[in-house]
Length: 517
Image (cartoon, rainbow, N blue to C red; front, side):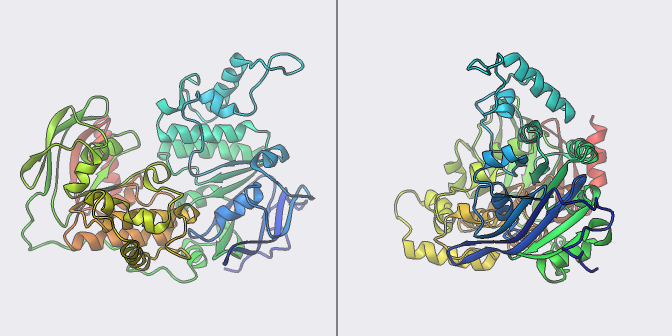
């Protein structure tokens, strides 16, 4: 498949001037060339996918476009006129609205306040100091109804799930009279029904003439929604393609620069003929009011147990109970037959558990600390304040995992906040591998990362299991769960509704959920 001539509109597009055109964009951070001569064109009435691996330059390009970073060189044109956004607020005033992957809202404020923060409707012709609360709440409710979301907009955002918070962030983006809407991984916290509702809205916006940039790692979603694709690799433009003319294999090859290794994403090893190990972790009636209904669960060494269920089914709440982030009010946990009181994460770590949390930004990384310090955190916590892990040992350990997991960073002393999302996720995984846990709980470990990094992490999970580690694997992507799990525990409405064996299909998981509707 040949790429579209970047100097001409692609077939089927409006032949007028692009709504948005970037050309010759360069951006360098120290010795790292983040963007090199990158181009992007966006036309009215299209949804344009921006694709590439983590670290390909997608987020940097968006931040240049929205005024977070100034471009070192190059030009941005909006409706044919040169612009140079100096801040996200300036970009919004120009008509460019962005919804980022990580929900950057104020959870202590109400839903309505979050949607209109900085742009509160005012009373009176002179738009004085008095906020028109009734109007703001009415308009917020109307925006959310466009997303088929009916919630109380006067309630604090913190009282709603991550999925609802993501929808509120999208509603905020729609509330601005934008010519260009940029969505950076908008579906990473949404279930299938919520994704389809969002897609209905985006198609309506496209049909009304809006130009939309859609960044995602879900290839199926991209093909279901997008008209054209721009692919970046290592900060450079690979090409621009009509989505209908670029197959999935060709797209992956364009993104990673090679055909994807067929060995990646392998299935669990055949355990037939081997005696099953004794359970290492067992729960009996484990429960927390409003969070998890009485749960019986077992995990053996060398076993990957998948947790299947829709958003809100109680998967993350179960992980929090097991790791001591929340305390149970019923039931018990036993490790190797001994009852334990999982009263805190420090207790869990000392007993041999590790947890890669769902919210990488809020609960996984400390952005200001280096890659080295982030990787050493859990091991130091297990040991206590003394003995202190020397800087030399931290560096040796970090360099080992950077190489083993393919973490892309210029140096282990680079602040982890400067890494791409996928590389941050690998560093969080490295943190727990350094403690050599007996049970590793992975809550959405591949959320928001590219297909190559995703399969590398999946491969690492299976390798760890083969070496005897017990793994509890939680993912919204049911295909991932069924591919790696030796058993699948299915949850609905905060309760376990059954188990399925290895080799079950994602349809079987959904069918079991539906049976208990």
